[in-house]
Amino acid sequence: MSAKKIIGLILIIVGIYVCYLGNSRRNSMAGDIDTASAKVANKFSGEGHVTDATWYFVGGGVLIVVGAFSLMRPSSS
Image (cartoon, rainbow, N blue to C red; front, side, top):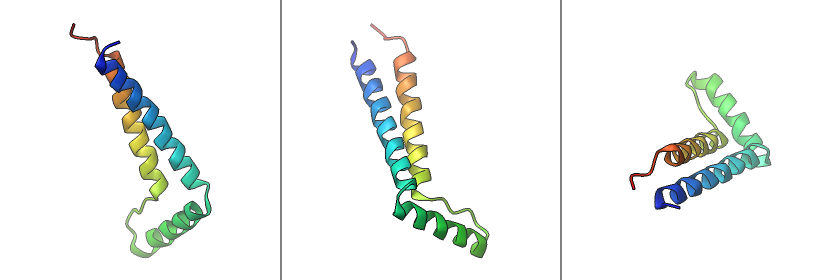
């Protein structure tokens, strides 16, 4: 197995773990407070505020996509 494939697998595993952390954050008490404060801030300022859990999901999704593309690319050797 080439180094690119190993890195791709590691990226996918880390991406899944980051998404898991985001889900845990969203379902925790801190996540509830973060969601409530984001809703209040959205109504107060009119700007779009996102929660920390959202950034975990975005980051995890990016890692999964990059890892998948790394696995799908043909090896140069």
